[in-house]
Length: 117
Image (cartoon, rainbow, N blue to C red; front, top):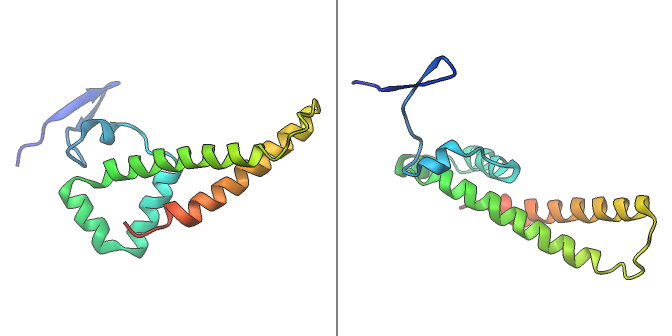
């Protein structure tokens, strides 16, 4: 078996790919993609192995990550519409935004990220 190597910053790295999509292999996986990956590895190892062997695992995890962030933005937008007073108090607005984000992340993790795929 012959393995090609790529030099980066003076180090040689094996030229291997996890999937059939080079962009998915080189782009760092976000928070929710990593959560989904870890969950799938533990809770559904057969599906994890199948996706890994087919080269579809990383593109799917990137898709989950992107969709999770989109859903968080939508939920936060709906949640922030409740406050119609348009307060000029910066700390109050900061607190409201953080609360909305925490609620949105909890909903997305429970209802979207930690699902069997």
